[in-house]
Length: 118
Length: 110
Image (cartoon, rainbow over all chains, first blue to last red; front, side, top):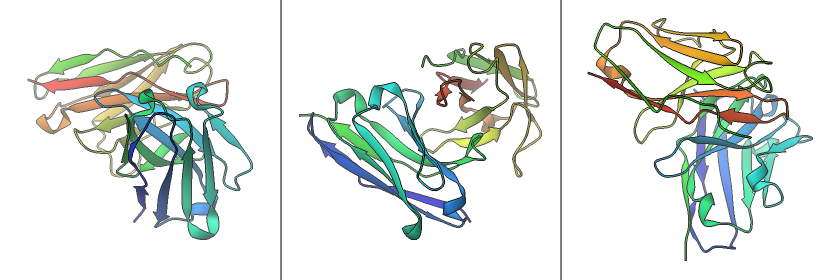
């Protein structure tokens, strides 16, 4: 059974940093693109970033470019999102998900809540 | 990276069919068949319903079907059930090697 478990969310002040983690199991992690998707309270889904199987390619939504960095450790079956210079508008539940065949978001974690507030 | 356009809400009675539209541009839906649909119940993670415009993952009811014409994709739910009440999101690959979601549609089963 595929499992994705996010952690690392919490309350952070504007301008602060946070690192999210996603522990994967139940599939061959190193063979899948992975992605982060977020959802602000009461709002819709927003794709944030994705990363290629070997970490050699990353893509980001314009609003987080230069502030967020996606990475992965295939030896630890883990995905990460380093978030710097956080803003109030980054407040959201952050989901990690598989990006199957670079075509669709097949499996999702339960999400971790990030609140950016003073 | 503007969001795809979905109606904010739709409704239908049990047994009926409803269709949710998702309108993009020639830089996303119009040019790629990487359109997918997700169901999200309150407080839960999204779940994949349809991928590559028309394909169903295993375990998903065949009451859910997808289609595309030009820059608009559609999700049809037939034989509406109370359990279908949820939010539905479309997503598409874009020409900038990014992904974009629709704003979401809340389905109410009357």
